[in-house]
Image 1: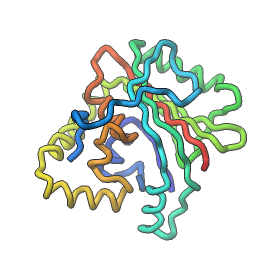
Image 2: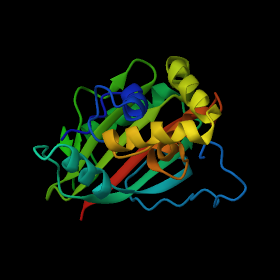
Image 3: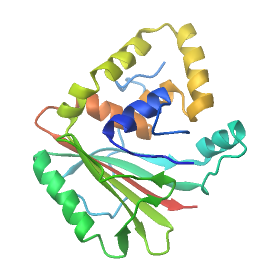
Image 4: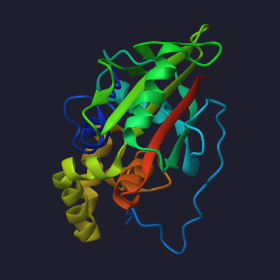
Amino acid sequence: MDRRFCSWAFLAVALLAGAGCAKQETTSTTTTTNAPPPDRSNPSDFPVYPGSTVVESAPVDYGAMFAIIKKNDPSAKVPGNWRGHEVVFSTGASFAALKSWVGQLKTAPPLGMHVTSSAGGFTFKGDGENGTASAGQLFQTADAKRAVFVLALDPKAVRQSLGPALDMIDKYNALPPMLRGPVDDQTKKQLGYSVSEMLDRRSPIGIVFATLRTMSGDRRAIVLIDESKS
């Protein structure tokens, strides 16, 4: 089973529509007054761009998703469960600066880590770059028990290209609860996540959508997924 982060478009759209890159894997992107405040802690020691600030973080646990994939396809090869955190950072640095920073990480990874194309349930192909919108890389430790995926994003550029997908989210949020249920049930069976869960800003994918939709045009984002084999 591959969880491929081919580009920012597939990170957002494939998880939403179940197409192409991923075979897996009433709430909205706006936090309600009853929702807990965003978690702005940073549980990872992986270095990020200097001066970056935490927007939100959420726990990551693929166990339930892998179990659903295996149930739907007994022949599917899924890795052992991995747990960790996803952290989204905000920075005023230009995308060009972030792209250069990702390039430096590739050339000189943090101590004890190296660049890889597959680790922790991820299969990462290509150079992780998409024009002037995203740049990323996957790293793992020598014992292959920890993986870190880093993705730098320009939310403004991503929003321009993801317009139709964001429109779909707005249409979903406008549906009455009785019509959302069947959509959620189907995506839960196919992906391991319902659309509602994907749009919950307290979930890993929900954080990304919320960041893309709400981060101001003069800010860039860094998405960091740090996970360890459990």
